[in-house]
Length: 157
Ligand SMILES: [Zn+2]
Image (cartoon, rainbow, N blue to C red):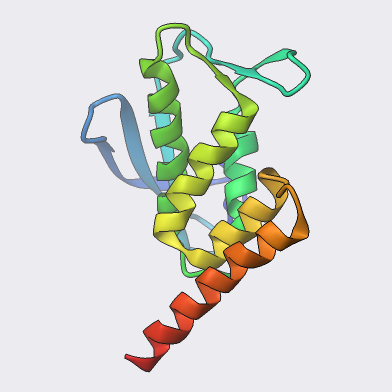
C-alpha cells in the first residue's frame, strides 16, 4: 500500500481489527520509510453500486473519486484521514440500504455535504461551492455569511 505521506510502497501492519459493524477490516499501517501511520480498509466485494449522472448515464459508484473530493475539500483542515474515510463508508452504506442500489450523483454530493457540515465549516463550503453549483452567487454568499458569523460568535466565547 503506497504511503500517503511519502509514496513509499512498503509498510507493516501494526494493528488489524474489524470495524464496529463487521463489514470491513481496518488496518493500521506504518510506512517502512518515513514511519508515519495510515489506515486501510478491506472489504468484501459487494454487488456494485451505481451512480446516476445528471445526464442519466449510469456509472459504478466510485469510492476513490468521492474520497478524493472529500480530501480536496479538507485540505489543510484539521481532519484526519480516518474521518474522511468514514464519510465515504457512511455514504456507501446509505446507498447499500436502498433496494435498487442506485443513487444520483447529485445525491452523493448532498450526502458528502451533510457529513462535512457536521465536521468542518470550511471543508463544507469548499465542497458545496463545487458540487452543489449554487444557483447563484448570492445563495453561495448567504451560505458563507452564515458560516462566518457562526465562526465569529464562536471565537468570542
Ligand atoms: Zn512514508
